[in-house]
Length: 276
Image 1 (cartoon, helix red, strand yellow):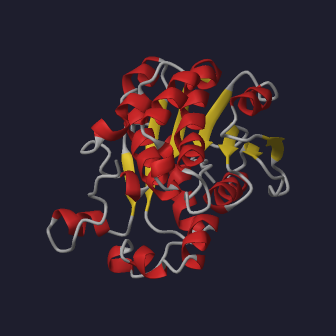
Image 2 (image 1 turned 30 degrees about the horizontal axis):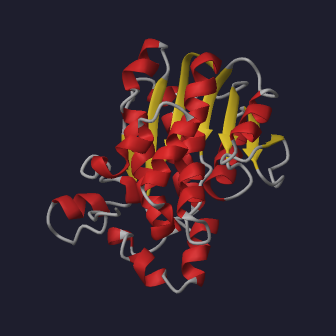
């Protein structure tokens, strides 16, 4: 059988590999013959995955993890993330944005092979990133880790919830990735985003536990159900595959048509609101 996806023997690094979409992603990659390195704070990876502990909110932890990763990798999947339901505004921003940006800036520029690809999970909550750029741009464009921390402090994080941090961080990572398409293209590396709709995962479990299931179902469009993690992992894996070799700077929406219905004026825009 032809290896259309091109993962056989390839070195793939997945953050958040121990649960949710990250774990489902590693399962698909293993099925396709990839060599998978899984990064997470807990060791709950699938058999066949090389586990390396990493806390994506901690710069030193990221440094320690990447000291154990091969000098060249073929594909990077940023799947680690939190909902903000049980985390502070600042911690949520660190996990969902700062860690990803630091990895992109400090490591992937040198580690990605020519012809390689980067895929990042944002969220449909981040879909309106361009309309609300003024709320988070100063953080996203800060010079370095310490600069990002300083800019977060200017947002008065104690006045905002972790869920506020979730929305802003998902908008910020979309902006940052898409504003660096040429940088990566010059290195012959593609970068794309998956924007999942509401999906059964550890994240949504926290929302459901808080009695917010009806709110989640508002963002499922004509599907009228939550997606399964595998239904997001498969398009996520596609984005970094050889099948998508000319797809770059793209935001792939996994919302079963909800955004199309919003743009057609059929339903209210659940994603258009100010956070700050």
